[in-house]
Each structure stands twice: as C-alpha cells, then as structure tokens.
Amino acid sequence: MFRPWKLGLSSSLQLKRLAEARGFLQGGGNGEPVHVSNRELDGFIERFKKAGCRDVSCDSCGHCSRYAERAVTIDPAFRDECRRLYARLFDGMGTGAFYGCATRR
Image 1 (cartoon, rainbow, N blue to C red):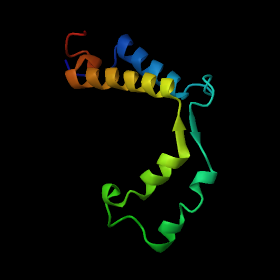
Image 2 (image 1 turned 30 degrees about the vertical axis):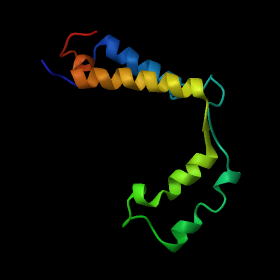
Image 3 (image 1 turned 90 degrees about the vertical axis):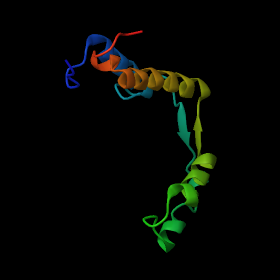
Image 4 (image 1 turned 180 degrees about the vertical axis):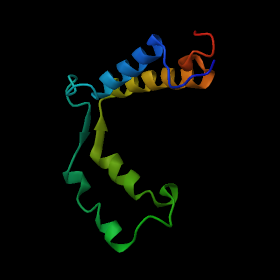
C-alpha cells in the first residue's frame, strides 16, 4: 500500500544522513563546505533596482548565475557526497522504494 506519509526506517535514515551532511541537524561539524564571498556580491542588487525579474527567465538573464559563479565556492568532497546522497534519495523516490512500494536494491 502506498503511504508516503509513513516512511520506513531505511528511508528515514537516508533523510537523516542527507540532513547531517548538509548541516541541518547541528552546526555543520564539517567546517564551512560552502562559502559565499560577500565582496564578490558587490553590485549584485543594482540590476534589481533598474528592473525586476518577473518578465524574464533565469536562463536568458543569467545575472544571478554569473554572480554565484564568482561568489560561491563549494568543497568538492562535500559537493560529491551531497550529490551521491541526493541521487540515492531521488532514485528511491522514483522507483517507489523510498516509500516501501518497490523492491529495494
């Protein structure tokens, strides 16, 4: 029976591991894997003083992406671990295994 509001222990542990890796459950014991350089954000808001972004798609504008490219650095090991955890989680959701509806791998 499909009951997404009731997760099994295995699925709950997957969520817990992801939350721990992301630092959601405690103050990020893995240092600062994501760093945002405030200096690199100088001038970011100026574009929004002139025009909003309601009528333009993010893909065609690219303003935020350009600033994020310069300002945000992510520790590669942290990024890879989070990607692995998210991939496993989303795979389980896609197959139904996360909800106990399919055979687990």
